[in-house]
Length: 380
Ligand SMILES: Cc1cc2nc3c(=O)[nH]c(=O)nc-3n(C[C@H](O)[C@H](O)[C@H](O)COP(=O)(O)OP(=O)(O)OC[C@H]3O[C@@H](n4cnc5c(N)ncnc54)[C@H](O)[C@@H]3O)c2cc1C
Image (cartoon, rainbow, N blue to C red; front, top):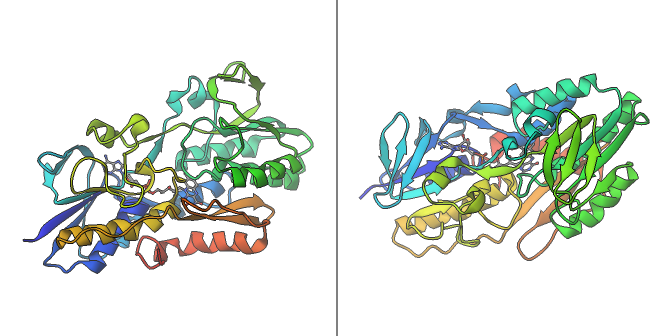
């Protein structure tokens, strides 16, 4: 009998799985449905360039329909809850939709309100709106004390705050106001990057650029009036401009459906990518609790595993595809240079010296993304 595969979320992971399933499954084997609350697919890595005026939010979103193969049905709606017993998802406008297989691809989301004062006092570049507000603040900035960093772990794209820090220093030098600016970098971890081999390379890069580094700095609160940042560890840093990655959580729907652990992350088998507990549910991308970078790159490498295992299960076979934790992403270091982080569960990254080559690689990825990644044309 024809089965129904429902994919919750039309971002990187959801779109890719839908298209891979469309390629692998015959039309009489399954209907494939993507449910997304916006119906737009957003290329979030481009937000990094928006504050500097090098990219526009309008270029970073495309209608989800334009990226899906014709046999995939898109429902533009918000899923309120998943009922694993009846194998149905309840939508706000389209009623209940049954599934044989469900893919949770609901991403991760910023929650500045988690830290008192953060939303009022701090900028970030993790949404289009916030990135444009930061652009306006940078245009007005004439010098002072700037604090860049991270206000909570885990957060998506671990390199992004470092990339911003490196590029910001470079921009200040170009504008001739670097001498009038004191730069600080804060991290809640004992180092500047979650993975030690990357922190070992990037901490000296921050120091070379004149950043004061504060590790073990867990942001407790921000005082918008006094313009002070206070840590749980008892440190206070005054600032003129604050750029912090806000705390992240998983999507509300997975928490509401009792499918998530603390923080809203879905307990997921690190190899099969099956959700632990209920039958017929897989998770991909930022939604999972996997011990790897929340990144489009991880979602990309997970796509073949999730699609391959669903195809096998649907055909009555034992799922045999195994994710090895592979992630590959670029890290911009300013001055038109970047390095690359290529790693998996067993092999930590060994970033090469930043070069123009890797920067060009990132620019090529930014442009070719739309034709390659969601369509399943970039080998996983
Ligand atoms: C500034 C920045 C820079 C980045 N740079 C990089 C980079 O260089 N390299 C890299 O690999 N990654 C990067 N990332 C991270 C990358 O964008 C994410 O990891 C990736 O988008 C995750 O894919 P996903 O499919 O898990 O979730 P998303 O792409 O976020 O998609 C989730 C989808 O779920 C939908 N959704 C959520 N809840 C519901 C609901 N209840 N009902 C219906 N739909 C719902 C949303 O509408 C959304 O479309 C960056 C991110 C940011 C913010």
